[in-house]
Image (cartoon, rainbow, N blue to C red; front, side, top):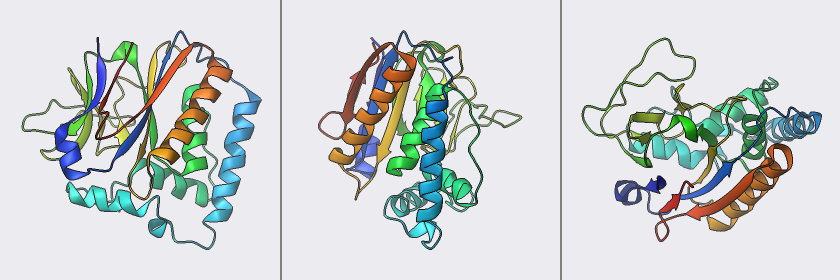
Length: 236
């Protein structure tokens, strides 16, 4: 059975990384809801107020990602983590667009807990999904919103399946191939934490997102927290 796993190379670089993983099956990702939009707008307003007088790069949930990106050779100013990018947009007063229920829900939880979040369509992935370090000769990948495919550079942290990368620069930008759409029926969603974020906070955020997905999309939902002692989950 396919798995999502964190490789030893990641733990060698980031020994205290934790992931909250949700596997959702038999879901309906077409159920647009004003309740989802209201929750998203509420979190946007809260975040905008929070960062009105606080420098975004200094926040303890954002600064560690800037350091992590520098550690594997990415410039956080040019390629901000997904949570920094999200907060910057919201802090400027830009409302996030409605995409589909799964994306809107993980954006809501990402803002609520100030954690990177993302998701992939499991019917568009092949084999295991690894959070790992890119090697030489990785396959080119077309990212969301980009006109052409380009390969990850060696040493870059990526998510990949058997066909190639599905998210570059850890959580910076996802591949077009595996994006969540209204047609998605099986999905994996991931929340990520680096110290000072730990297991308890990731667990709380993961449970909150799992509950919201079940409420708005139905289906069969399972979730787990991954870390050094529990590095994988079966994507069944």
